[in-house]
Image (cartoon, rainbow, N blue to C red; front, side, top):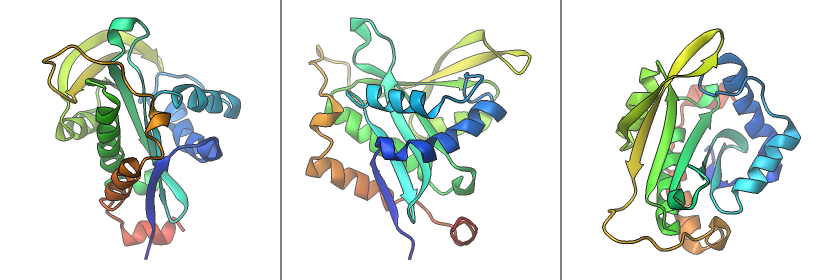
Length: 208
């Protein structure tokens, strides 16, 4: 029986995560980068962001099937309760529920940290991503028209948003992720979401 785990990402996961991310850079407009980051740069991003926010990796039988993370929405003080999120899944594991499991885990952790809003930028057109994010509770909040140039074409970036809690009172400072990283509640959330991944027998055979 295959084993699925979702755990906080570490530098030891960097090469496998970068192997998933690289083709999104070189072959698609999902990423606005032109060149995949180096191993050193990717590790720097992990080290920098995980000081405050979660990066999660999903492994199936020891192999990285996908990863997801939160990053600051903007740097000025008034935006400190908002984050941006990204999910990347290896092609062999599409439509297995990996992205949804990673997102639900991130939602739970970010709520516990005290965040209020999640934003995601989607390069247009990408109906599949829009439908997925709608199913995950995001709504369209606007667009940056002709804001991204890649592969010889100007492209719109659609922004979708999800509220994590009511905006009824003044927020308190958020809790850095390392402070809840090893708590039993965090481990329980990750274990529960790992169980929601739907394994396909053909993927398990060919991905072995």
